[in-house]
Amino acid sequence: MRVKAIILDLDNTIYPVNAIGDKLFKSLFLLIEQSGEFKGDIKEIRGHIMRHPFQVVAHDFSFSDQLITDCLQLLSDLTYEDKMEPFEGYETLRNIPCKKYLVTTGFTKLQHSKIRQLGIVNDFEVVFVVDPSKSILTKKDIFKKILSDNYYNPEDVLVVGDDLHSEIKAAKELGIGTIVYNHNEEQPEAKSERAIHSFKDISPYLN
Ligand SMILES: [Mg+2]
Image 1: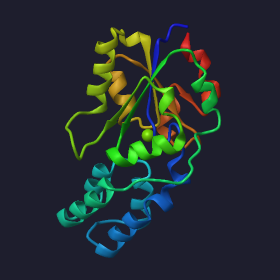
Image 2: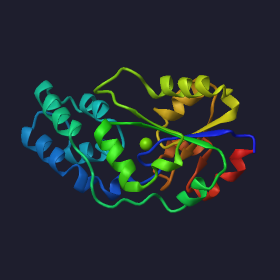
Image 3: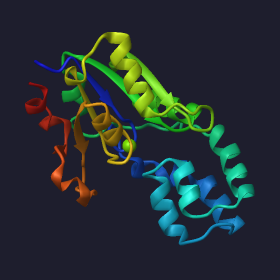
């Protein structure tokens, strides 16, 4: 096996956010809706919140400064305590005999609660939460750190994630191979990318 390490995204790569999103973000959606201090359609905002970092959505839908402050306060303390299941096929990934690193963007407390509920923490050498409300570090900075800390060359590593504008872009900029996790063909832009619909399909990319 050529690949020595796989770096994984969490949300919409290891589990589907829409399975928990309505429940998880109920209080947030209510706060946004009641404030009215945004531009655009609340339904569209809901969809974006499940797919993109909050800070990006707040910017794209022109949230007021007050609304951003209120949302950040809510999100910084939010956790998810119900049962969660990884995507079908996750077992295949778990059993691949190489090192795995989890690099996820989001609110520290929330991301760790989801990792706990999924029961996956022991599958990873290190879990990194990139929290834009706490640090200016990006996924790209963390990828560089993983390479240098472990003396990996870019070609030793594979990045798997669903976001072409986040982990996939960062990996490409560093010369690391990428696979788009495109579970439900949700990303038409992923057509020209190396993509899988399930971890059951990952093995050809490891050699
Ligand atoms: Mg993701």
